[in-house]
Image 1: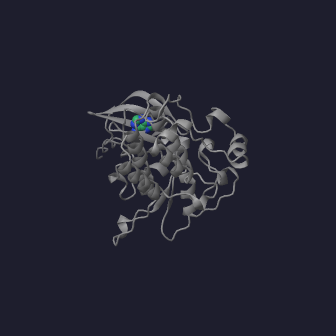
Image 2: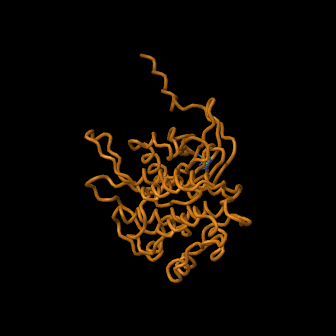
Image 3: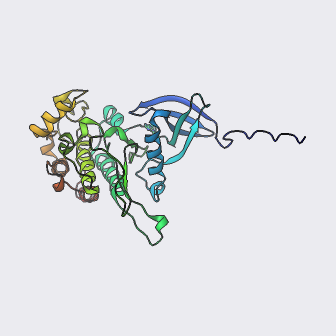
Length: 315
Ligand code: ADE
């Protein structure tokens, strides 16, 4: 009898990773700071039942052009880890010590040049996401992608205070000539839902979804300017958008009442009127969160306005 071949070892190409500390808990699993050989990385661990979110996210990160854009979180690998009784899905990305924009704003005041830097790089990431890129080689086709859960916890801050966009578990891509996959309308974080989403009155065109991202982008831009140290007078403690009206855990009804019925939006603060840049930025933000989705600015337009603002204001 011939000898049995040795069993093939499972997944020999997995590099050893040591999980160091939990940095964030999200809708799907949690994010760890981890050590992979000589490199510090972030590991987002999805339980097996959140497989779809893991698959969506890894697919989006691996689309053409994604890995080379400065304002998208850098993807390193997606792996199945653990034994067959306790399988987990690990999404490995670059790690950013400053954490999310939300963490950053809670702990820091922001100078006017840094307001512009964070805002412009964040808008650049969103403009890239929304953009469809075609080339004659079809293998380098990037579909338009919408995020659908845009918020300050899903924007990360690099050491140089530029921003990158993360968390594509709810993202949708729009491949040319293909109908959008099976989806439903009311997803994302209630606090950041556009009025038409709160009303359940959405259609499924890509421009419609982009307008929904832009509403949320307006709220995040307001969060950034709310911590700016450039205007006269004291800066208030960080608050989430609408926190003064709906608190920490709003219901859908709370949000419908404030955003749809009362048509409230985060307010202009009196001390901003002394600063031409902040006054101008607030005007741009009001064009992101217009009740009429079609009237909202595109991400590319916001990026342009911010570049102009940077060129015309100094302090
Ligand atoms: N929180 C969520 N993702 C992160 C990352 N990649 N780096 C640092 N903090 C994070």
